[in-house]
Length: 471
Image 1: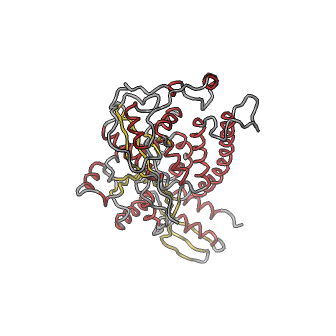
Image 2 (image 1 turned 180 degrees about the horizontal axis):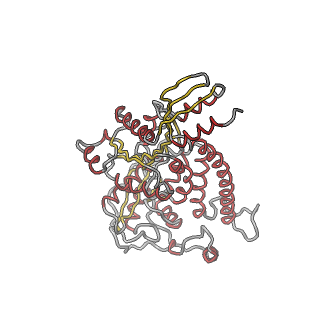
Image 3 (image 1 turned 135 degrees about the horizontal axis):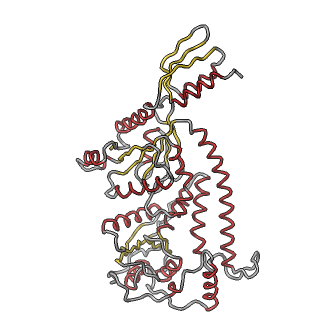
């Protein structure tokens, strides 16, 4: 069966004061990649310089008509006011501080044709395929989204909505699906409106004086509470697994989305992890052993990628995923060295790591995708970032060098010692070989003496096990 046709999308962005042309273009290009990951084809974009987002519909009237030309809409927001009872209800809800109340009456203001900014509508015929989706590179209010929908006859997603939808489609594990559903519902609650959940005539289950909209919001809040309880149980189970792995040598790959962490994970561990040229291709934490296997074993974790303007609810939701970084002994901070905007991406990753308290964890900077670098750029990166590794996950020699560096990091902490294993205690040999590297062994009438290299804590624990009475 052929795949369904991809919907066309148009990007909408405002360049605000203090945002350089380069930053603006980088943000817009990233939004385009997000929209592509979501499964849409970007057929155009509408941009404007403004001091602030227009209160009614993000951009002024001329740009709104240009946007509507790409979507097949009218370019006009109906100026009819809400019914008096609706306005009164919204005002009461706002005074009571109810979450999800309509923003204010600016949402119903007419578009100001005299807005300051580059507001001349674009020329040209409408596209052969009108855009069904408008993706806005800002966090916008529910009323701004509704006004854009009325003017364009298209579905409107702000940047947060695009990211939430990507996470919703790509989550695989039970924990990730629960986390994403909580974030998605939290995003949806203030955007519910009368009639969206099945009409305003419903009465069943409604409390005294409770409108259909209020009922819908209450149901969503109750569902979020149920999901949080279920997630807490899953995270307790995951926490137990992490506690069992905590004594092992662990490396976490962290970095901006699409930096090539999954490709590097696959190369380092020989595992069949998902590798796609998409943003947020990996949402679930994957843990595999370093290959060729080191003694003691080294575990490698691939974590969810970071991104600018990540919705706060998603940062909170994926905190447990990022806990893999806190539990690690070493962080490999992977950066796409071929991306012109890599310095800003590096700053974003460092900010998030600081936010979750991962600053004290030792880290190593790894510039990936060296195969895409211009001649001489590899040496320039090495000079600008002393101590960093510049490599390509596609080059076996580069990957082997990174593996050796990881093993050397752990070996530097190891000390040499002796373990006496009397006959009858051979059951502990598995523990010894798992947590230490055996250098030599000797046998006499009492048992075996093993000379090993191990982390001081592991060596002390093994000696403690051997000193206990059998059984």
